[in-house]
Structure formats: C-alpha cells, structure tokens
Amino acid sequence: MSLHSPPHSAPRRLIWLLALAGFGLILVAGEALPDELNCPRLNLSTARPDTPERYQRGLLWRISKPDVSPSYLFGTIHLADHDVKGLPAPVASAFDQSRRFVMEALLDGADLGHWTLDTIAEDGGALRDQLGPALFGRASLLLSNYAIPPSVVDRMKAWTVYLTLSTPPDPAGLPLDLDLEMRAEQAGKPVSGLETVSEQIDSIAALPMEEQVALVKDAVCHYDILQEDIRQMKRLYLGRDLAGLTCSKEKPSSPSVRCTCPANRGS
Image (tube, rainbow, N blue to C red; front, side, top):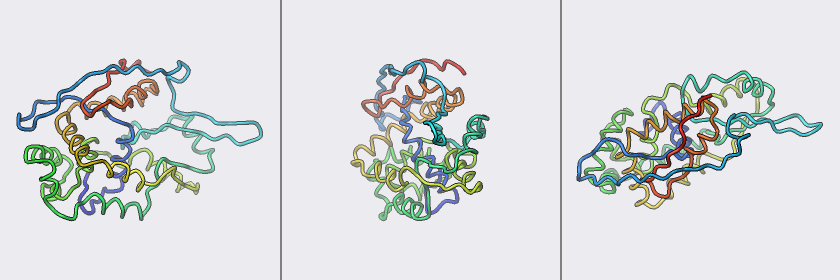
C-alpha cells in the first residue's frame, strides 16, 4: 500500500484504503508492544444485529417493476483477491444484462491527483512530532511491509498511515470494484459513481488530529488481529453471510472497542 509520490500501485491502493475504511473494520488487541507506547486496553461488546431472516444471506438483489427493465444491486467487498473476483453465474448474468455500471466511488485522473497531494505533508517531520517517537517508530516498522521507507513515512499524514495499516500488505491486483469497472468499460457500458473519491478522502482527512492519532495507535497496537478481521470478512463475504457482514460492520463506541459477532454459519 504505497503512499509515497506517486507509487505505481496508487490507484489500487486508494480503493483499498477508502473502501476498507467504509466497511468499518474493528480493531482488536494483538501482540504486546513496548510499554512506552501505552497501548489502549481492549473492551469487548457484543453486537446483536437485528437482521430479518430473509435478509441474512445473499449479496445480489433484483429491483424491478412491471414494464421496466430490472436493475441489480450487488454487494462488493474491496479486496484484490482471486476468490472474491470470481463472480457466481447469477452475478455474471446480471452484470452482462445491465446497460450501465454504477460503482461506489469513481476514480478518475483529477481524483488521483487530489489523492496524491493529500496523502503527503508539505513539511517533513510533522508526523513524527504528531505521533511521538514510540508510535512513529512502530508505525514505520509496520509500514515497511508495504514497501514504504522511513523517509517517506515521515512525510505521510496520520490518516493515511491508519488507512494503510487497515489493509492487507500484499494486494494481488485490482480490488473487486475496480475490476468490475474495467469489465464494464471493456463491454462499452457507461460507468458512473455514487460519489467521488475526493469526497471519501475529505471525510476522514477532516478528522481532528487527536482522533487521527488515536486511530493510528489502535492500528499499530492491534495490527495482527486487525489483519485477521480482514480475513474473517473475506470468509463471511464468500459465504454470502450478510448477517455476519452486518455484524462486522457495527461501529464501536471508541477505537479500542471490538464487537463480537456470532461465528460464521457457513454457506
């Protein structure tokens, strides 16, 4: 998830960052870190999603009325994974029948330029001062897994550090949404977005600095099990477990609260 200027994988990293933030992944306690980092304690709460039984499974929805061609709503997960990108036959059929493709956020050249400028601070060294030496050092170590050297980490903004650490370190190709966008373009379908990437960036970049630092601390302190949460979401998604995904998406009351959900019920 390279965020330096500009990495060859910036477009797909962007989709990873924004989309996984949108899924509301929940941070949990991982390996013990040095005492001086003062990691927040983990508090557990139980999520009890009130999902009607008929809506607990399935990700493809047909929207129709008499004498009008149907539309389809397909739930995606923003992962660059071959298992995820293998569309089931009903989904592939709905995609082929559709005349237009509308995605969550459309990435264009202007948005990419906005992204590149917004991820890098003008004054190098600001992040070290904002995070403090212990948190900055541990974040730098973790970011090396994303091929981001310390010299670049020092110029990153706090929210980009958090979003980077909230994704797997080695995405395999394009995430599902961007893959579908390319398929639509190749098929000659008009493509549009419900919102812009700039709007998604601004929503997290506008957080107060103390909240951004708290998010970075959680991502660093609880990194290992955060990555396991991502793997669990993939399993729920492949099992078409909509109730489980809804549970996983429940927002905790603070960065160090984890919602516990029922075990995956299988497919």
